[in-house]
Length: 477
Image 1 (cartoon, rainbow, N blue to C red):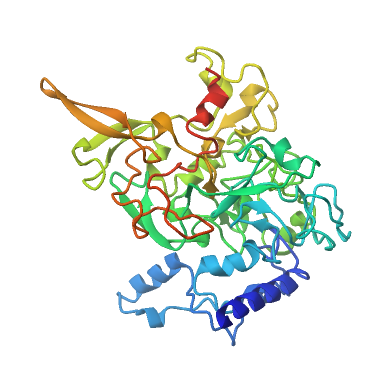
Image 2: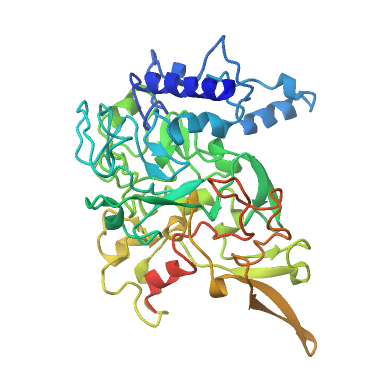
């Protein structure tokens, strides 16, 4: 009870602090003036009692600089408000369920109660309730203007669940935004980027490797960045994932949202630092619930792409093919194999010469399969690029795997050769994403968001649609 009370107090303190903060990359995250009050939203210089230390990468650098003599007790503390034990717990005080500090609820994967306004709401206006949003979004003052829709799913999905459509599956935007008063339900995620755990980093090198202690700040910089959605600059030591050079932003990921500084309108390219950045944000209107692309295609100025940013950790996906040893724990004898992968950072028209039909030739782009946009060529098909988030959610997915999507590899010796082929089974997900004991919480890759019980082994690989629906929605076979 005491711990819950302290976390609740933390949420209240943060919500009050955000009410007066100047905002840059949005909320209190970045663009700090020389007399900023934003630091107080998260930090206490003399009275912090949270045990969380500073950024892991910086901590590791300090350990190396000390010759390995620093102990955990010597690690610099982040001086965070409240009693949060993990970064995820601290972030969820605003971005979680029943948290008043932000409208982006990444636990339930929806745009809910908070200081950010929905589509059509004006800065300073008082929101009124509706059949859909009454109870958690009514009668609040709009402090930040967005182009979002209340109770609609976030573009990134959710870590614990996602609000579902009437058919209880991920559908198009219209199903979430109608005014019929349909009760929205939630589905537990079937895959997610796991927080505060050590797990397999698929595509990270030429072997099955672990990503230790991954958390919110592994992807996002709470102090702002040059990138869209405060995605970290310099991820995992990669050189093309965003940076500042002499105070000038060199972003890898930009957006086509309203008044985003992407350089196409003769304005600044990327988020400026300090007071100029806050000036940019005064005009910016993010769209957290569009159901379609908000990411700018990597065609202007050579500034990288979201796919190259993801490849900062998933290093194999930045090359055409590479060997990959599945490891004894999964498929053992398969050993090192050359893999081939779907190209990214290409327009739809790039596949016209090799497909049976032109991809999405009808010109009606399925809103459930978001494509990155080249503002100079859109809406033509050659201005719509395929990227990582065309097929995958960033946070978590409720997609279900069945039929041939439930499969593992088996081998058969034919003459002098070993032939590997897929065999259907009753465990969700395609191998090697399987575990030996699906009911062992220590082995299960995720748990039901409501019961905390491990669900079946396997994963839906953060896909945006059941089975391989993401393939059909583009290729229309």
